[in-house]
Image (tube, rainbow, N blue to C red):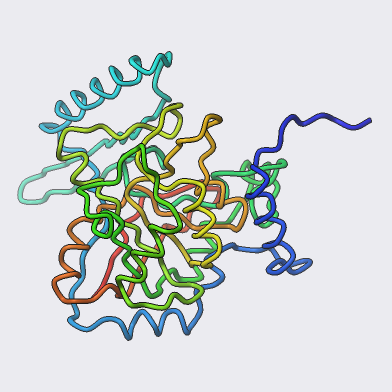
Length: 328
């Protein structure tokens, strides 16, 4: 008896990309680690060669835990809740960007000791994090193929990625700059043509394993008072659409770092770029702070550098907070 599993988790074009990837990149008996496998010695040497000034800039959004600032964070959360209710949705997902930090301080005479325990949401639209292969799946599996049930016992994608070493040439694609706007708007998702134009402006030829650093102006969008909605909200939002997702898949990047996520401008609410986690094993770093890096690197007349994204090696982790570094 055949069990009806319902509609395909992937759209036809994404299923086709997944099928092509499996035929060309999967070896029987060898678990595919996705896009990170494309980062090799040549990728790292390209990155090292792109460092000219010895400067570094972090691409991480600050994780707020200071007690005096948490009230501001709660105010933002109330804004998000109001926006959520305006959308007609019942409630925000639990763990929406949350970080719980317990700090333990001991002082005895002239001695002091500190320790802490932290609990955080590894996904969402707030903290800079790396999505593991065990974040988006289909057919009861993660990319690899890795049975989804392995995440209950010993799924090791993040460990394997950490041990492989994610350091490669990073190429900055300034979509907002190419469009001549402050930020990408929800009505006009990023397309393959946008990405081609931004790449042409760099004068760089992409190589498999390069890191794509895609700037869409989120820092300016939020500075203007806008709230970026969660991917769980069935509303259009700024970001990359289906056409841009196909472009990314065709370029074989080692990883993608971005500020805005999927545009979510389709009626069924697919997250096209995130679906590439399953289709090609794409390593994604969400919620990067890219404005300062783009500005600093542009002043040097360059668009490339060494991108280092070293995740914590946590067994069974579906994602980890991360501080990507761009050296130029």
